[in-house]
Image (cartoon, rainbow, N blue to C red; front, side, top):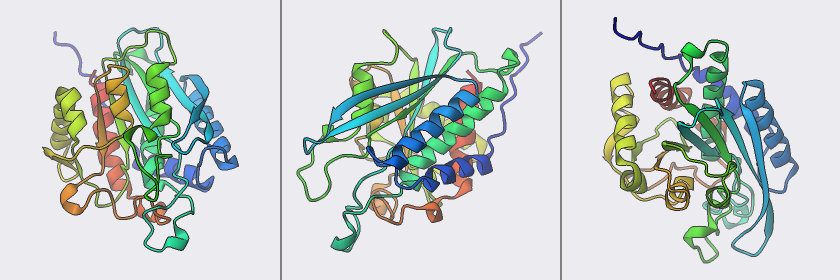
Length: 302
């Protein structure tokens, strides 16, 4: 008899939306603030509640301006005994400056980060909840170990008024790639989520993703099309984005793609990117559903 096909859980977009809202309720999660500490505690507690083995990777990193920052990468491992693993990631910190605000007097204010940060984390928390619900029946679990990583200090890159350089961004993932949470850690492939909640989101095949992990990109975009989410996942080459996946690829050697709302023809990122208006008004549960259901199908079909 042919093997029985494993059921794919239904991704709950309302639950993911609530997880985004919960992060935003803390306020801007800028490293070194009370909101950042409280939100980090919440994320670690939720992963533990949903049955993950939680590892917190704490270190001091140096920003582009010489400032030292306390970094906290939060990792939730499912089925840690398995050697065959996949990696899912998003950044959970907020940008300290709204440097894309049109009025100069607002550019020193922090970004709320509903879409740029919280949306990806919200999707992954809902996936963690789905995996946790299957832990009592191993036949329902993915056949691989799943590691969810919330990278810190992604968005502390040099602002528009300072000299930018590529490695001023993604300090948490750079640290993790050089010092993984487990000696000799390997994953077959990884998927990063960033800015996955806007109503008019456009996910194109990001340049570095196609360069390092073309087969993973094709698998995800084909899956999205088959599920009816081709309006979000546009199967065309997009631009190159410096994001956490770049360092997972370059430094850790793990093929990793970026699902990110970036459309060069539209002008780049979503209109509220790095402004004070990146709030819950920008979050559309239908986009969370498109990303979350696609990712759930990929994970549970392993």
